[in-house]
Amino acid sequence: MKVAEIVKAIEGEILTPPAVDVDLDRAFAADLMSDILVFAQPKMLMITGLTNPQTIRTAEMSDMPVILFVRGKRPSEALVRMAEEIGIGLLLSPYTMYETCGLLYDAGLPGMGKLPIVQQS
Amino acid sequence: MTQQFSLFARMGKDLPASVLQELMFELRVSRVMTSTPITISSQQLMEDVKTLMRDHRFSGIPVVDDGELVGIVSVQDLIHAFEEQALDAPVQRFMTPRDRLITVMVEEPVFEALKRLEQTGVGRLLVLDAERHLVGMLTKGDIVAGLLHALEAAYHREEELERQRHPRRFFEALVSDETSLVMRYRVRANDFASGGRASAQLKQALLQMGAAPQLARRVAIATYEAEINLIIHTLDGGYIVAEIRPERIIVVAHDMGPGIANVELARKVGYSTASPLAREMGFGAGMGLTNIERCTDELNIWSAVGVGTRVEMIFNVTEDGARAPVEHS
Image (cartoon, rainbow over all chains, first blue to last red):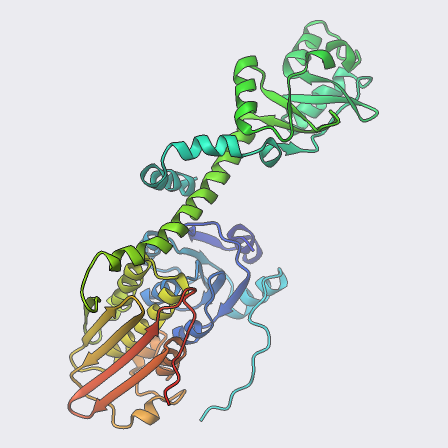
């Protein structure tokens, strides 16, 4: 799914486009960066409610091309510039995390599918 | 748009001009033409031509009767029809007939098509197959778009080749019994704003040296978690030292305290002593060491309370960058 289609589905806006208009093939939503780092893939959309520099770093380390911030939380100008320099796209959704995910899933953007249940020690 | 400009800037540096020439000979008309164009029959009216041109912004429409190409009608022909107030006349009266059509064969190189466009001054060529049936149309715009696309692909191929050549050359040029490159980064405690700087710079360096993207990614993710640990948990921050050898990369994160009382416990999923600030930043859920373990081929942790902690992460360099842990007996 291209950035333009994502923005249309969530009635959102593009804060800065990704360096390459990549066709994203799945999405992952979390506020826990370590969780994202476990599942990150090169064509995956990151959906998060956090708007600090670590979201951009996490995307940069794991080759995620686009970050979508939820519930209309606009990141700082400095953060947008940082993403722009690295070439990571930033999008903004007016909906909450739950609704943003629902809209995108409905529009045909899948997630990770069923995962094995692990016992926490 | 910006993407294409930056592409050109990179190409100016990296790609010789001859690549463009080669592409013009290599690239076939079939790859850049507009396939199955909209056509009109010779018995339809100039009125229909006007509607088609207005609705689709065409400047020329092929005229086809019963599957056979019989001519082309252009904007100039439409103007003539206007001048003669003959919009109700059939297309046949104003079109350029078959014997005067400028055509190109579908498997000719783009170079030939461009030459023909230049020499004849027409805006578009009709593309024919071996049986001389119409299969497409070709404008200069189609050629430019096709060349840009091919150039981008060529650039990526070039980059990939460079990536494969570079690391070996780099290490081959330096003669010693054992050559390695050491990069050292200072990480400050509680400095969340610069968290990830060291890992990002290390990742860039690895990619520049020609590491496979998957290897650079594994090293970056593991180093990032270690870097965040230094920021969250240490009294005074610490250092990240990456030693890059041709066959393995060893990244060590070390600090001067406080030290981990129970390393086994710290390695368990979900165990964390992180501050609320760290949690606000999206860390401190006790995933870090598990994550590091997943990315490394070997992980060694030494720690003593009051002394400090040393986390050693080893990555074996493989062709595709995938993990290749060595089994110890």
